[in-house]
Image 1 (cartoon, rainbow over the protein chains, first blue to last red):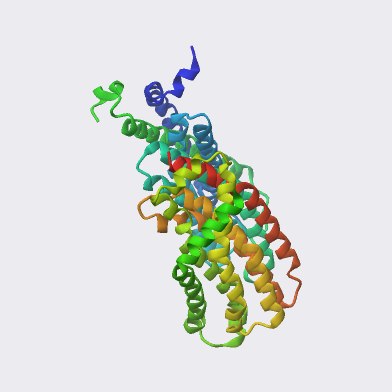
Image 2 (image 1 turned 180 degrees about the horizontal axis):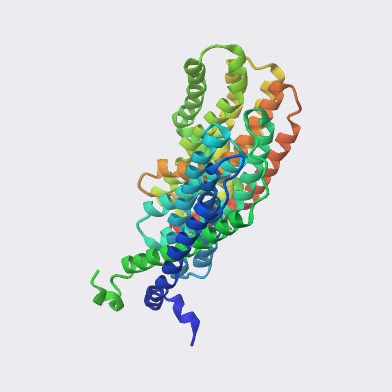
Length: 241
Length: 219
């Protein structure tokens, strides 16, 4: 079997349909397990009480937000360089999930910050750069939304994503440096308590769940994008879009 | 070729002097609004001056970016420029340089006078001038990528700020940081060096990205 045949949106469409349950169902199961372990098995933190439990969604969301941006830029770059439509569609469908995770990590971070640091927001290096990452996602999504021609949207998005990827480390280090200069305004983040086994387990299960969820949702969105763009192709006539 | 492009763009800008002046006045007005909004307390003004002047410079450069390629795009010149045998890289570099001279250099020159409103010392005013001199080319270079990507799009003016402003953040941090260091009485040289390094990186990468974006936009 030639796997390259799945680079064509038309043949990838049914494959994606078959793959989605394989990711969606484990994702749901792992979310349930992770939340159970996180809420009932992991012990209460002696410093932060139960407030720390938000870590189980906060940290996986933050990781996914960063990782999906790089993945999105990778797919967009491939789509641009090799003129591969499917890769570009993948990039557009990754963008929204990535932006969602970044937003979740910011919101949960604020909710966590209030009971532990006593404030919703500090201009901490990590929070600031996550906020900027969200801005980069918004730029990518709004650029693609403003361009009517899908091929031009793909390529323009690819350039923006690649410029963003070059810029992300520079932004990260400049923010970090800026942050250390303004030391007075910041609250030092909690000294990391040694993490307990069950806490780590819950964290990893939630991370895996977020991963599988991302794959499932991205595939669903990819199918929608394929249908939208290829609706005139005869292959999809019977789907009745 | 490079010289010709720069000369042509400067000539065109000179014939529309009002555009150039409006950017400068925008900058002056925005900077002057801050004391009105915050209050005339000298110590506070001195603290916020670096950030205010730099953010106003970012916004002012945003205003003029739309014009970087739009006029040439509308009358078809840009398409002809793409067909020339010279590398597009040079065309982009020339146009970006001309944009810097027209839109950013006046801001750099007027910034020290605006800084006087914030009661900055003479040494700090020089640092403000130097940081803008090193930093504004970054704004033109990165901004040109955004201008090329949004060429001919609906609502391009607002969109370009969404794309470009987050990418400006390192320039803002180091530029305002240099001035702030000088206000605090420490050496601004490390900030200026980093700003210079960022400018060099932008000079290396962004003309390529802009050229690629122009080809995509004009397909």
